[in-house]
Image 1 (spheres, rainbow, N blue to C red):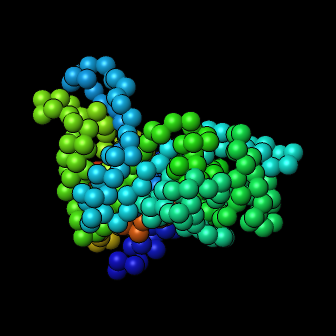
Image 2: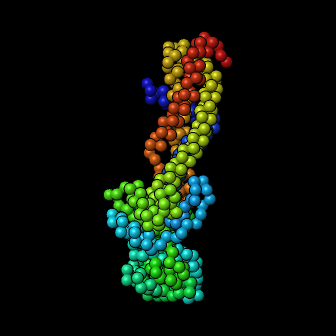
Image 3: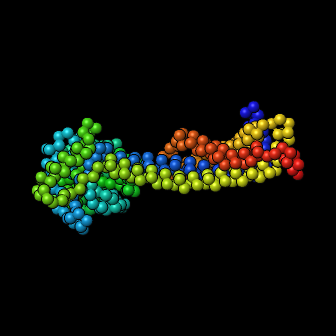
Length: 402
């Protein structure tokens, strides 16, 4: 009986194809918009998390600078120093790696080619702290750091610009006014979550950078990499306590440095993206309500057109519930067809957006199932009143209807 009702509903829908298609548009557009927005939002969230993780896992980033008073202007604090790094190394043995680093944008030259890149000076702990491996050649050693050796590693972007697919090991490039020998090529990191090409870089020993590039002994950043065994909040508290003591900050004074947990930054950015996705999905969901109103309108027209048919069915023994179920199933089937078309369209749009925006394509089965269920519910809710109206028609008046 149920499948016969579904068959009759499909016959009724196909009886006037153009009208049915126009009725479906609201549901199709609404479901497609919701699916596309949520899928694109999920992909963006995953990309944000992946980009932040490229900076290093379980990573604290320490930089100089703080607030003079709560709500007051930001002041330039004294730079971080080597003694700060040594204090952290000695005071936090449970850290996976601790590294000092400084950066500067410098023009580098190889033959007739030149390029402005980020030149980083760091100690040997930098590779472990940033989870940055070497795909060709080797890392520099502690001895080369202490001696200020003129060696460096280059990122994949620098390699491609200067040497293409060739082997750059042993060749020299000019970094500012100094010449350094390439001893390694860093693995590809891609773009960070802040839009920076991390592969457009040159990495050299910290002492070499300080003496021959920066011209000072300041430390711009200290990276502290933790492990899963120690909570990052505990590690951050220890870092802050050690630095306050080393930098002789009075108990009543604010920190003149900042400690940022990259995991928290990733979670905050991902949370913001999720909220935006939810808001856009909710706005797109309004189209579903519009589509539901369209279904109600067309079902009322259908009831009016088929009044005589309803009267005949009632006259030969059909019950009110049979008429109610017939029109309710028709509205639901109409809405479900729109939902399925909308899902296909939404997935196609999300796939195109993922390819063009270089974000992961992350379709969600629960969201798709919810879209199907919601579109069916829209048909049932907005089709109920026309179905009830059809079921309550008086058979005699219906048979007299022209």
